[in-house]
Image 1: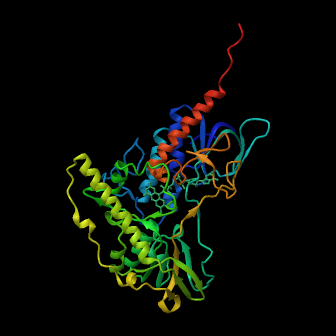
Image 2 (image 1 turned 90 degrees about the horizontal axis):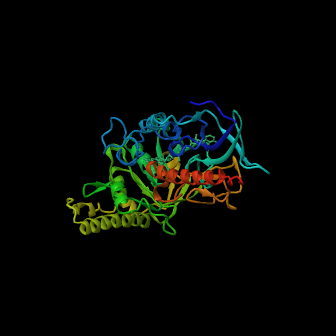
Image 3 (image 1 turned 90 degrees about the vertical axis):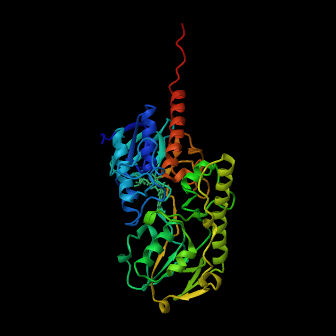
Length: 421
Ligand SMILES: Cc1cc2nc3c(=O)[nH]c(=O)nc-3n(C[C@H](O)[C@H](O)[C@H](O)COP(=O)(O)OP(=O)(O)OC[C@H]3O[C@@H](n4cnc5c(N)ncnc54)[C@H](O)[C@@H]3O)c2cc1C
C-alpha cells in the first residue's frame, strides 16, 4: 500500500483489528506512522481459526463504530472470512499505511539518541515510537501433561479446521471455553464420539428477554469493567454464534451425546485421569449465567423497560449421568479415542521486542497500554483497560486512548522555547 520508509514517527506492528484501529486513530491525529504485518491484514481471522467459525457477537456489536458489516443482518453472526474482509475494507476506507508480508524481527531502544532501531525482514527502520499490536492469542499452548504418543493425533484448537481432518474414531476435546465447546459440538454433530473436558468457565445466556448478552454486558457496564475480579482473571467465557447463536448449555451438550468429564489431570500410557470437579465447574458456570439474568431483571425493573419476561430461561435440564457419576479415568485405546484437541488457550510472544517493558515473567508492564518503557505501547491484550480489550469494538477504544497519548508526547517533543528578543 505504501513504500517502506526507513524513518517513521510511529511504527505499529501487526495489522489485525488492533493494528487497523491504531492506524485509524493515528491518521485522525495526523501522526506519521506505518503498520507492518508479516502475513495479510486480519490473518488470524482467515487462517488461524476453524472453517465454520462465526463471530461470537452479533454483527451490530462486533465491529468498529465507523462501518457496519455490509450485507449482514445486524443480529446475524458474521462468518470469519467476512470478518477478515471487513478489516481489509476498513483499512482501505482511510488509506491505512499498511505494509503486508514484512515481519518485524527485533526492536531495540537506541542508546544516546531517541527512538528505536527495528530490524525487519525487509531492512532496518528507525522509529520514535513502537505500538505492539501483535495480538493477544499468538502462541498456542499445549500443557506439559500432553502424552507422548505415536498413536494419537494431537492438535491445538488453533490448528483445528473441520471434522474431516481427524482420523476415524473418538475425540477428546480438552478445554471448554468458546473454542472447545464449539469444536466438541461440531465433532459430535459430524458423527464422532466426543469427550469434553470442562474446567472453570462463565457461560452467559446467548440472549435474555429479547436482548443479546453483548447488549446486556454493555448496558450493565460489564464490558467496560476496568479489571477482572481477583481469581477470575483466567476464567474463559463459553459463548457461541454457531447455528444462528445459542446459549452454551453443558446439560444440552450431554443430552445430545457429548460425554462431559472434569479437568484433565494426567496421562499414563493410554489412561487419562480427570479431576473430580465437573459438577462444581458446571455449577459455577450456572451461577455466572443466573447472576447475569438477575442483573438484567434488576436493570429492567429499575429503568421500567418493557421487555418480555422469560421465566423458562431459569429452567435447567436435569443433570446428566456424566455429571452425577463423573468419570475419573478413561482408557483412550479401549474407548476408541484416536485424537485429542487441546483447546487450552494461547500466550503472547514478545521475544522480538528487546526493551525494558516486561516483568520478570515476561509480562508486559503497562497502564492502559502505555508501557513502562517510554515510547513503547501495547494494544489488544486481555484486560488492557477493560473486559472488552481483546474484542473488536473494545480494541478500537483502547487504540483511541493510545493514539491520544502518542499525540500528547509528540506535542511535548515539538515544544521550542521562544526565541530571545
Ligand atoms: C477462536 C477465536 C474466536 C474469536 N472470536 C471473536 C469474536 O467473535 N468477536 C471478537 O470481538 N473477538 C473474537 N476473538 C478475539 C479477538 O477478536 C481475535 O483474537 C483477534 O484476532 C485479535 O486481534 P488483534 O489484532 O489484537 O490480534 P491478531 O488478529 O492476532 O493480529 C496480530 C497480527 O500481528 C501480526 N504479527 C505478529 N507478530 C508480528 C511481527 N513480528 N511482525 C509483523 N507482524 C506480526 C500477525 O500476523 C497478526 O496478523 C476471538 C479469538 C479467538 C481465538
